Amino acid sequence: MSTAAPAGRRSLPCVIPDTPLAAAVPGIETCVHCGLCLQTCPKYVNLEDENDSPRGRIVLMRSLVDGQLPLDDASVQTHIDRCLGCRACETACPSGVPYGQLLEATRATLRTVRPTPFLGRVILGVFARAKALRVMLVMSRIARATRLPSLFSSIGGRLGFASAMLASTRVSLPEQDYDFGMPGERGVVALLNGCVMSGLFARTNRATRRTLRANDYRIRGAPGQACCGALHAHAGDLDGARMLARQNIEAFERSGADFIGVNAAGCGAMMKEYGHLLADDPEWAARAAQVSARVRDVTELLAAAGPRPGAPLPIRVTYDAPCHLVHAQRVTLPPLAVLRAIPELTLLPLTDAEQCCGAAGIYNLLEPNTSNAVLAPKLRQIASTGADWVATGNPGCLMQIGAGLRRAHARAHAIHPVDLLDVSYASVLRKPIADT
Ligand code: SF4
Ligand code: SF4
Image 1 (tube, rainbow, N blue to C red):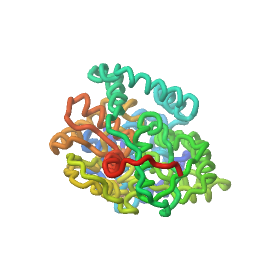
Image 2 (image 1 turned 90 degrees about the horizontal axis):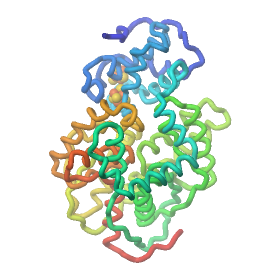
Image 3 (image 1 turned 60 degrees about the horizontal axis):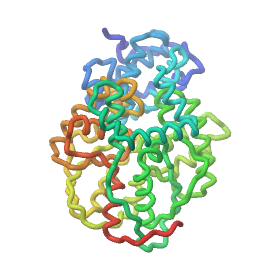
Image 4 (image 1 turned 60 degrees about the vertical axis):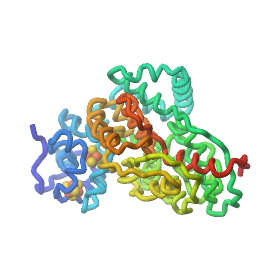
């Protein structure tokens, strides 16, 4: 069945005024229906249905605005739900269609007639409440320490995959403080702790601090910070995302730092869009834009400093580009610069490294079958490189790819690029580092 209206039709009056989707009409109208985005879309390549392509979804959005399709049309909901939000279509689009913003506006509008599924509501509710989130992450770490997730990794369904995701966050790399004795004059960085990063990738957060210090940055805390709000925005809960964004803007303004360093691509992409998220809020718009302008992925900061070379690590590594780094932030070379700062590291090219792995926030938990269909070719491409490590800078991708590798009994492990640089630096100098 095809629900997409023909391209190039005449515009009709908007029947859903005062909705996020109505406000997104200028973005919808930048689409010229050329179709250059189609082959970059993992869902279109997978399903070969125009309604599951970026172009088809934009036509559906227009049909909702025009009233040619009602907001409660089940087919529209399905096609919008299936989108991974990977934004590969944005990179391919010659017209500059802000697809990610259109998707968020559509999901926010559809939520008015159909609430987020129960599992999604529970996850978003936990991420919006600092205490509940802390409890969940502590329980996750306790569960991880029992090794039960490893045992359950191979069973089918959501439980098996979620167990494999949790088990994959257990990284056994050597850890050692070091001090290169530099004064820290490249700038002051306040780091986003990140919910999942601080809860399950604490080693990577420590590695982020150490590698930035080693490259002449001074680190400063930003107490009072919260979840970045990315999961909420992607699920259409724009009010929830705005509430969290305001909290972070206050915390990072107070820090007075030159840069806001982020080691999770999805969080960095969200924070770089706070200006857009709060553009219609007179009290917060300018502050949001100023905070967004200071956000940098950790690899951008490191690459701006070189980064300084470490000690040789004779390992075989391939790099998978997180969608929210390459497509949303357009950061392509800095992660490679980080890996190339490690002498004797063999960097193996990964075919379709810029294609989504299927994690997409909480998509892999809400839509496990389609998520696995997107992950399968990624795992095949990784296996064909012969790499021992897959470097990628986003917790969702680390867990999705890590779980897939674990369930496939593959030789490779997923790792953040900064962890590898950190091990390389620790091999050069082994002197305790002083807190700045
Ligand atoms: S490439 Fe851009 S303009 Fe062309 S169909 Fe896709 S979204 Fe529309
Ligand atoms: S965001 Fe990704 S999955 Fe969604 S339409 Fe664009 S390319 Fe396809």
